[in-house]
Length: 222
Image 1 (spheres, rainbow, N blue to C red):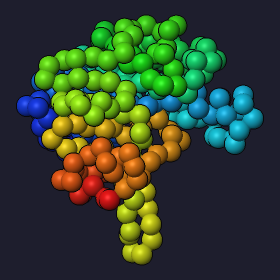
Image 2: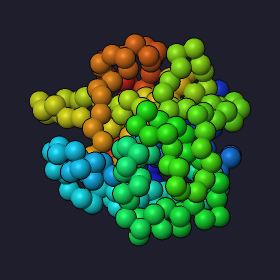
Image 3: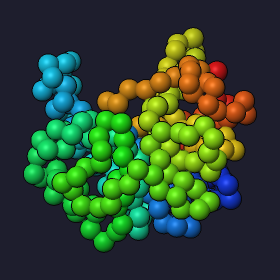
Image 4: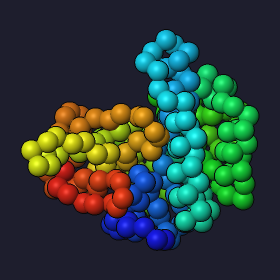
């Protein structure tokens, strides 16, 4: 894989945080993404909200296809909120539905239920509320009593000061119990790691893995 990843272990599983915001489990050939929020611009336009550039779904799918190609993943796990709402799936253009079908071909594809959608019901793949693959468990929103957990939902971002200016970067949050993944979708927004509930969910020694050109670890900003 020609990218700067951040390797780490969780409950004995060897994982890699990708600079795109995807998570790669090489030993199982599993690629994980969270919070694609496909159709966000369409939903905003439909509900009379702020207009967003209409290319967000295609941009997200371009990046997803690049990660699938680089890793040659055999299993794809989407950790919930894959669409911005139920109608976003129904209103997806036919060419983008075919694009997803092409990405699904030849691999196992699992949609985890989110709070924005129950999982895309018209598209192929399996639909689950959560997925245990020991020693890990995959779900949309963290269970505070769980360990070895991979989840999303919160769209974590790290708030940093760079040359006196505040900047915000999507990030993974990692400690010995769990990983909270960044939102993979374009224009998804996020929650600063210094704010509750993220500030209380993660252990004091947690890391934030910044996404971007490389996956870069820093102490989790609090």
